[in-house]
Image (cartoon, rainbow, N blue to C red; front, side, top):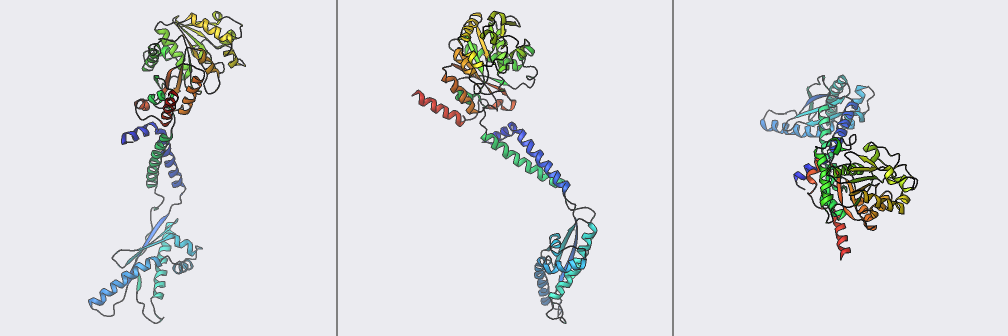
Length: 463
């Protein structure tokens, strides 16, 4: 993947990136607010070796000895011996181990100076501990450097600068913590977005969809966020780009096959929430708009919605005809300009599959085909129940509706295989809810492994 590919992935998976950054910033803010403020007080000590004579060589040797001792004393300042004496001097209940955690010391490079820093939740107590540490460490080193009690110490520790009362805490640092949180969130979010994209098996390409179904991709319908409230784009916004996509689907259906417009077609998706009903209704309106006589049948006898979309209700319809309670002409309703007729689902029956597999349905289908140029069936999901496969086996063709970024490739393959198992003619597929960020990738990219395997299988069966 090149840089532009990664940028497209981040644009496509921006929600992962934003969620990761927000989580990291909130975590950093919570950690910062829960941290106890710490104040730092520092002291500077001079390590000096006394000169026995006034010549330059002896003075230089004394300086070297002091520098060597300073490096060793930096570690010695946090030793148990020093902190135990410091705890006794303070007498505030702090243990030697607790004091070790609060003290840091280092030798200033190329000097005879030692710098010690004490941190504490109280600024005044930090100063007290630092000053007491200087006095205690001087006493401790004085005892170490004497060969005997009456002898002079080889090295002497002197406090050069005492502690000054700090006015601001050294931690927490909100700006730094939030900056670190932001950086971590961006890194984790970017990695998560790339990993999610690489492991995503949902359909995101018209080419991949065509390979999976071994049929053409008839149309790619863009995402219309107003469709939830206004699903009939062909009626409510006929001049929009979204409406033109349905006209493209109409054209592909009319002129895509060698035999022209099929007499009947089943429209179904592999699973629920693919937008099948919306596509069925708008395609029917688009065909009627061009003068084609259309009968739209809501054959989803489990969750019918065509009547609600078109505003005619589902009180009577297909189930009444299949139960031989009413004739087709009694429940068929004209809609719009007159070229479109609608047969609602009717009451939800206890046995939808049996009704659709009956001889009455096949007889009804022949009647409907005699009344129109095309009969369009809105069907339930192919992988949920067998209703859609029954419908497709009786119709002249079928259209498979998939949802961009949600329908899994293996579900598409299973749906196509179910249609093939009943000798249904798959006219093509529709990629629905295409997001603007994914429009550029509809025909780009390499085929997915699932599509490649399906092509190899199809080639093997053909040979």
